[in-house]
Image 1 (cartoon, helix red, strand yellow):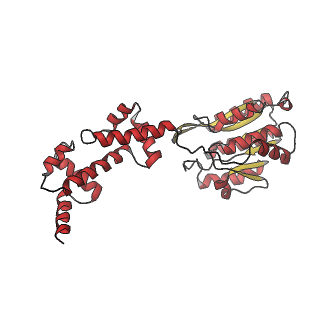
Image 2 (cartoon, helix red, strand yellow; image 1 turned 60 degrees about the vertical axis):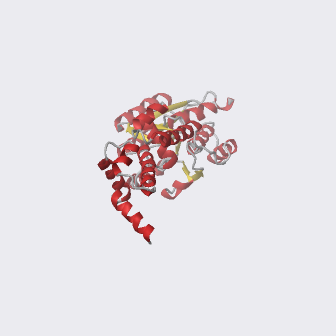
Image 3 (spheres, rainbow, N blue to C red; image 1 turned 120 degrees about the vertical axis):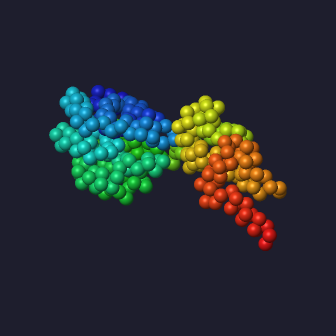
Length: 318
C-alpha cells in the first residue's frame, strides 16, 4: 500500500453501474482498495440491478470532455483507464481529450455486451473503437467472449464474469501508477487476482424466493385472479420487478406464466369426462365470459375450445 502514496491519482472513464459490480463504482473500489486514489469521468448512467440493465442515459459528449479536462488539468493523471463507451460522439470526445493530454498509460476494457447478453456496443461502434481509440491504448483487457472483436499489440483476456475486466484492468492501472513496467503490472495484477471463474451469475436468494412464491401463489389463485399487479402486490414488489424476476428465472413474463397455468386448467376441464359447458369452465377459472376464455385459448393454441374438444373426441374414437 505504501508504494501508492504521494503519487498521481488514476483517472477512470466509464459508465455508472448502480449494482456496484462494475463501472465507476467497482473501479473506485478496486483502486482505493489497493491504496491509490481514483478520479472519475462518467460516460453513461445505467438503470440496472441483479436482473440486468433496463435503461441507459448516455452523458452528452461535451460534458464528458469537460469532465476529462477538469480532472486532467488539475491532477495530471499518469494512468487513464477507459471502460464503457457507447456512442460515437462520446468516443470522439475521449479520443480528442487523450490526444491533447497524452497520459503515459491508457488502459481500455471495452464493454461489447453485458453478462446477460445485452448488446452495449454495435458493430459500427466496435469498428470505430478499433480504428480511433485502440491505437492510443497501451493495453486492452477484454472478456474472453469479446476478444474476437478487437486486435491490439497488447491484449489480455479476462474471465467473462460481471466486473472481472474492470477489476483486473483497475489493478493493472494501480501497479502502472507505481512506475513499474507494463509486464510487471500485469504479473502483479494476475497474482493479486487469479483468473478463477467467480460465480457472479448465481441467482440471488431473494430472486429465487420471489419466483418460487409467485409460482406457488398463481397456481393456487389463478382460478380467481389473472392480474399480474395483484401478485406483485401480494409479493411486496412492483410489477416491473416481478417481470424481471420471471424473465431471469424462466425467460417468461408473469402474464405468460399465469396464462400457461390457465391453459393447462382449461385443457384439463375440456378433457375431463362429461360435457362441461364453456360457460361453466369460464366461471370456474375466473373469466368474465366464455368468449373471453375462447379468445385466450385460441391465441395460445391456434384453435378454439370447440375445435380442441372435437379433436379430442375424434382421437378417442380411433
